Image (tube, rainbow, N blue to C red; front, side):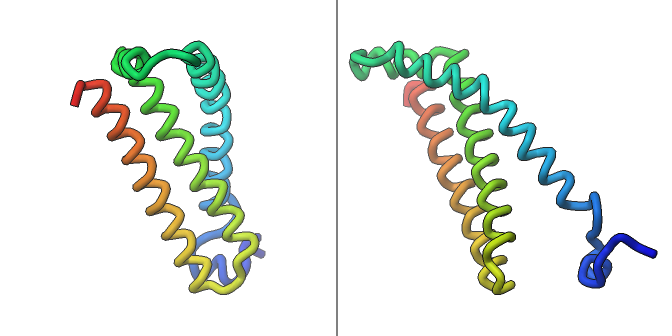
Length: 126
């Protein structure tokens, strides 16, 4: 007797196939976001009242630039993982579900790449 549903057997999925990996990645990104978010909030609070040049200079520093890129990448990946779960749970039309998940993944990638590009442009003086 198998622990998989008929649909899971057809798709080749079942217990501990795709869902477990998704669950672990979401937990790991949330753990990574705790120190990254604390660092980001403290850094932004320290920059309150600073002029544009000071903020750009801070972003251009190697450690803040790398941490900002990491923060952006992990945030957008975590966001799309969470939205995917919500969509899978609450959108019941299969075509709408797949289309929305694809839209969320593309939007997360596009917005994340745009934010990373902005940081890198400032960091490398573009």
